Amino acid sequence: MNYTWATATDVGHVRQMNEDSVFPEGDGRAAGPALVAVADGMGGATAGHVASRVALAAATTRADGAAAATLVERGNDAVLRAVAEDGSLSGMGTTLTLGIFHPEGRLELAHVGDTRAYLFRGGELDQITSDHTLVAEMVAEGRLTPAQAETHPRRHLLTRVVGMAGTEVDTYDVELRPGDRVLLCSDGLTGMVPDHAIARILHEASDPAEAAWSLVEAANAAGGHDNTTVAVVDVDP
Ligand code: MN
Image 1 (tube, rainbow, N blue to C red):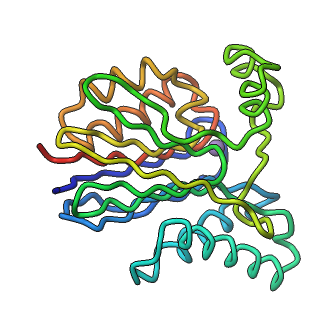
Image 2: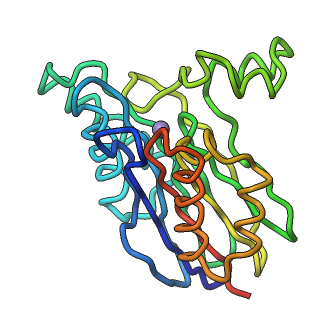
Image 3: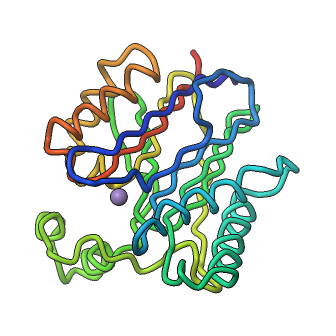
């Protein structure tokens, strides 16, 4: 398989700082393995910015063939170490959703938090990951409808985060096909732009860069309440 990717990130219209991080920062093309990841940090002052960067750096630095979940665990260890060394960072954490696009077409995903991975195939958009949020758990238990979850005052409350000792990492394997388009995105996109509008943009964009920047523009046009970060990876036909 050949993969073509683009990433885009923007502070939005409300926040002072962009606490999201994305890897890689540039666009590219490769036969794989290709590593792509999005992290959305949180914490007081500048700590969220630190958490997402520390986690992504630790998860993406050593390309030693480790499993995606192992890379996320390295990110978790690095955030915990940074807090142990500097008490002012106490309480920081980050989401981390990381994909390894393998040469034979397998997408290996590891995921903690509410940064999502989607598969766009044959005009249909499917969310691969499940959010680690209080409201997603309440929806799964039938205590909340998806529509109620969208406006719930505590909808951003995470139940798992990178930067928590022993945090559990979800993993997914997807067999990709030529023509597939994969999206990783922070909640700055999904909190502002409904899935049907995301699907339309993915359908209309001719390449990953156009898709990535159109998604960021859509989040900002809807208000840009949060930082928005997206990575779009095409499986070349
Ligand atoms: Mn966010």
